[in-house]
Length: 585
Ligand code: ADP
Image 1: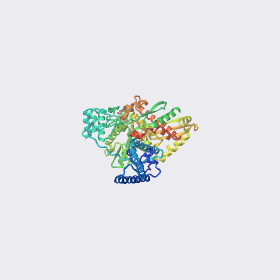
Image 2 (image 1 turned 45 degrees about the vertical axis):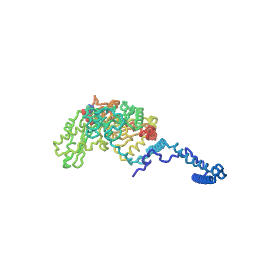
Image 3 (image 1 turned 90 degrees about the horizontal axis):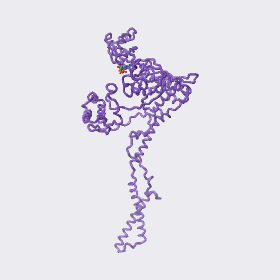
Image 4 (image 1 turned 90 degrees about the vertical axis):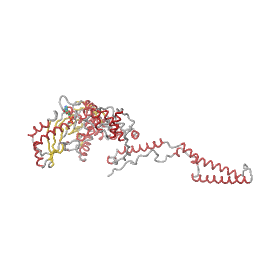
């Protein structure tokens, strides 16, 4: 069913008044003072004017014929002359002054713009209001009409933008060859041996090809060498995301300032409030339950019997030693922990779990799995490897297997929030929080058929920390699986809150963690890079911090909901007072 539209979707107006501007109201006409309707007065004066002109001309001809001096006038001629003058003055006033007015008081383009702005503001207000109704009603799912295609410009530099490092004639030649398609854009880094220059040239070529400006997407101030072959291909700049700090978060007796990269107003402020409530209550305790990354290839046999043979072989404890020796060859840090198989007819899904030190571990586990698959080919030559990932892993997709079995780090984090703190800092009561948690996070999520989503907004905190610390943000899907529990304790005075998160996938080495900004955020938390004392200690610590921050986020948002403050605080922090229509133009 199509969602009802809450605001006009008519195309934007051009810079013309949508209705006639009532100039008359502002600058009155001479005719406004007339006692008769305008058309009657006009008719009267027109008739009078032409009648007296006719009369006077005929009298003039008569006088010439009879040689009567012109200055000798009769009474009727005097009346006719007066009538002529009166009607002449009226007609001059009506048409002449209106004509002059129309020249003097031309509607200026500013008036049109002001009116258009008013209209834009109305649309914006309607949009903002739309956020206050249930989302199904607020959404207008229709796509906006596409702007006309930009002309493809192939030769001239089209943007008056800061050229970055694109300055030389040689660069200009390379840009032209990228635009013409003779130099592949992806080959610029290897051809030039200078990643920044390659990015600048690619960027300029892209602007010319698309006819679209990239001004606003910064180019300078980034180390393009650091992402080569690891983090991002064919860069043309970088997106800036502000990093806010929530904390200190007191977990396991240590204080952490938690970096959160986000553009969502309220999020950091709210998490910060949760941290304060936890701190004032003596801190949270975060326990790591499991630490193992998974990968599950899909292999196929000619019969289900053969697939079952392999399942039994892999799950036999007597074979584990051999398999782990083969698996562990791939890395100093990857250590096989277990193998679990699921069978679908002739197809077998083999879920390998291994520890990965301080790395999130996807590469590490994949290498180990490849070793085992190669090894198995000897005893199972009829095994056909369909794919090293068969989705039973399961990476970056909601799946019950992660929720139940865990993936990466499984953590439970708890705190007892004092009744006083609940009242004074969180502005609600223990009773309201417990009831809301039961009806929203448990019952409401059950009604929605949630998979790991028994929480208020774990994914908000997880994703913001992931972006700040160089984790893979796509893994927020399973990393945000969380069940939030609340219970009144100490004779109902205090609140026990916990978050249980079975699949937090984090690392402090590899991937985006080594980039300058992300590594600075890891450093702030004291978990940068590989742990020297105990491999894996840094990434495990990071997982406990993530869970602690989620606890803070849950506490604060749930309190805001219980106290009915949510909309108010979003209006304060999440609604810009800036005129968005002006900013976008
Ligand atoms: P991932 O497996 O998370 O994708 P990488 O493929 O980058 O990450 O693997 C991590 C790399 O870091 C490996 O080459 C590994 O040998 C190295 N490394 C160094 N110190 C550690 C550590 N403490 N824990 C895990 N890996 C480490």
